[in-house]
Length: 465
Image (cartoon, rainbow, N blue to C red; front, top):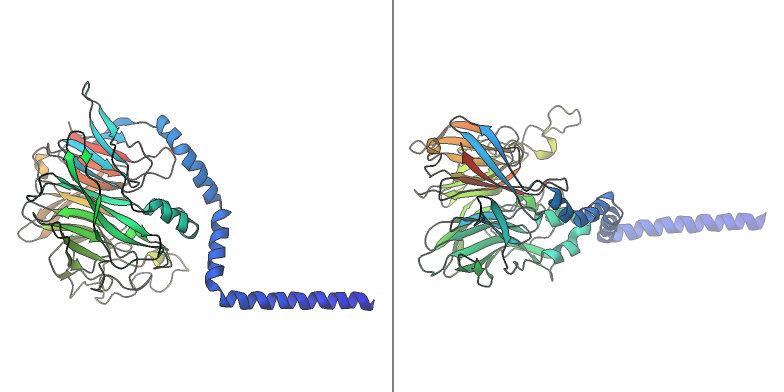
């Protein structure tokens, strides 16, 4: 009997000692605990199993997807014909541009294609271009961080935009690419711009890619906690400013004083800013600041600079960008807090109708005010000013694209009074990532990939009856 009691006492002592040791070790090693939780959450998740199955099946699903079809939409002035062309890669983000009448598409994973008419028919076809991929370290980033941030590592890391333009001091057209870039030795990432010369516009022969700009401040996936790796707020839009410079929009990656440190009001970094970059000597300067996630950028033929910007819930904006101006974020917004936007939830916190650090009391006073701001969810992406003749009733209108509402919105803008006078919602039915005008006056959209395996991105050419 005494032996049994001794054994029980010893077991209890060992159990208590183990618990105390675990508590002490956990307290002294929070980072290791965090890493262990990430590993268990990722390696044994249904999400990983689904991603593995998905990666093996995307190519098979593309073969069975509808590669070309048309839809029609009735609008205020025209019956639009949407020509849908399914992109041959299952990729997020990327960008589109026009080159010699053909559409150039660079995927988020740096696969380069042209979309042009077949020589023997009126059908459009994608052709893969034999060009070197951008060396942005995406594979290494995913390998190092997928267990921490899950599927967002693959979804949000990559190419953000492209720009193909002619500049006076260069014999050939220049092909610019904005992208996240992984610094493997430091396990952090920056935003970068790469450029190549277009040596042959017919075969799309490019020179080697050259990195001409990168942010000095390298960001960790733990810059913000909810979400971690907030690269959906990266910005990344490129536009030609003049014969010597381009503009580059950079988001704040959710570092806004609520989810992380404030970056957009800090002049020591480029995040939450629009940056002017000299393409001759690669010098750069802050053009404007106080931005959250400026996803759209367009400079019209009168040199007006328009930007579209993601706000928090209900705070998406169209801005007229002026040099050296402060657009207020995160101290001024017409939006509210993402985490508490549903005012009807009984458990919603007290800040549900207010952005917590708004200094302007929802007035935007003391900062540049937007031309227009949405009061409900819109999910803004890019924009153009329509300067063609094909849609003759759209002349000088702003055409803004949406992700969440899956539409384009046509705005009539009064240039003299700098006022938006009218808007028309045009339902497309796809999340729209990018928009460009063609020289013939038609308009081209790039859509997002969907959640389902057969929902590849599309390039949609907008025509009319």
